[in-house]
Length: 127
Image (cartoon, rainbow, N blue to C red):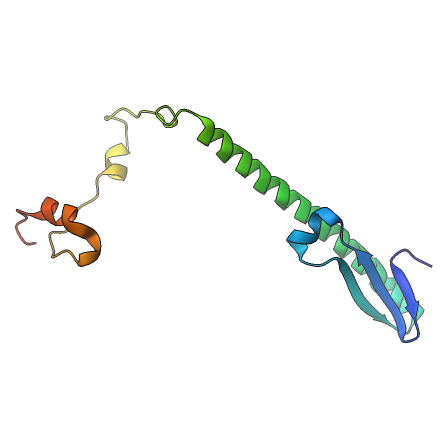
């Protein structure tokens, strides 16, 4: 009999245990699918499911590795001195002015913006 293929009184089932390290990400402890009563068709479907679950486990492990590497990068960044984390950019750098300066509307400011913005907008010509 093929691995992960079980014979039952109702036909054949595919039953594969999810590795313990992948259970939180996948949300299951086993993968179980009914394959029908015909052994030849069950073998074909078994091969498809075996490839599918192997691919799922591989892709999930890769995704978890990317998340861990991103978390490690963030942790390393946060360990740096807060005053030296970011680069100082020269004021004359090409494209910097367009990224930093944004036009401020002189329309009335709602309550959500606070008094600091109201004070900054005092003296606008009302456009």
